[in-house]
Length: 349
Image (cartoon, rainbow, N blue to C red; front, side, top):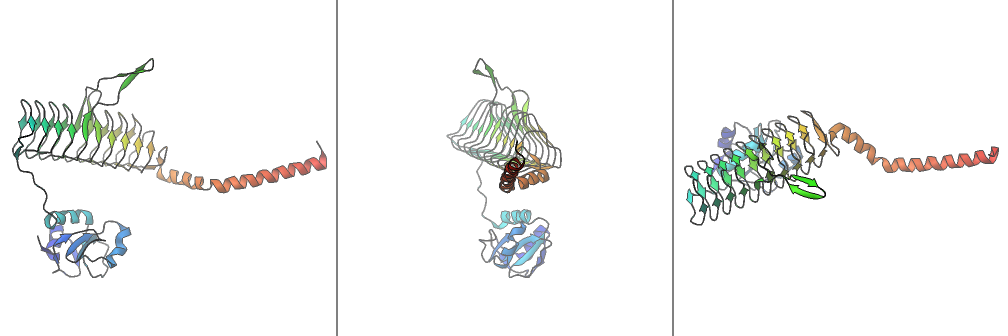
């Protein structure tokens, strides 16, 4: 679909700096964009690329008004504006026709909503409920008594175990396992005895879960993922964890059992959170941080063990001076040794 810069600005409530009649036929990143395409700048470090981009139009924050060859469209959130237009002028989304593939296996007492699509070799066990408009990808397994809401998209090779509850508009990417057993064992005389994990997993509305994520079922009660949570690839969430609404969990994070993570939290890549701690609302856990105690709301922590960012930066600054301090200590030790020898020579023992 083709749109003029003026039409695009009207859609996103943007202000144009430059030509209004340029025609946009595609979308691209700012480095790769060509004439006829629109791109965006959401990070200040990419601002210098405005001078070199070949794009015909660029979404920019409202404080950018540079005169460049491309038309600028000033908006509150360039990334969000770009996403809206990408849905219009970008490639058409892949659509799945409603119906059940002949190779799919459907159990007893399964309830399928309107316009559900079940792709090849999917397995849906007894007493499962699938909401209207949902897509169950190829080779997906859905266990007994599980319920999914409306308009869910379950990509191929996802495993959802028994008695799991999934909300509306949930997206789960390939290779993820929801509701596997929590890691619970009792050790007696050196032998590890499995503790039954009889709880479940509850996932709220508008959640997106990346590839190869594992969310374990609770020992009792539930592992709870709140509305609007976004989970990146390769994340491990243990049994009885609670994650509040609109929290973001980035790749390779590990969250141990019975941890409570508040609302609007950001857990950056490769961070780890020990079990039975609480992370307050709006907190930020920095990349590779190791959280070993409760984190208050509205606090940014980094490092291991995780501390408030300003404190961790100060410790890191001191640590970088270690070689210099070691050399100074050696110098002082040598100087003291010489002074002691001199005193012995002058005054004896």
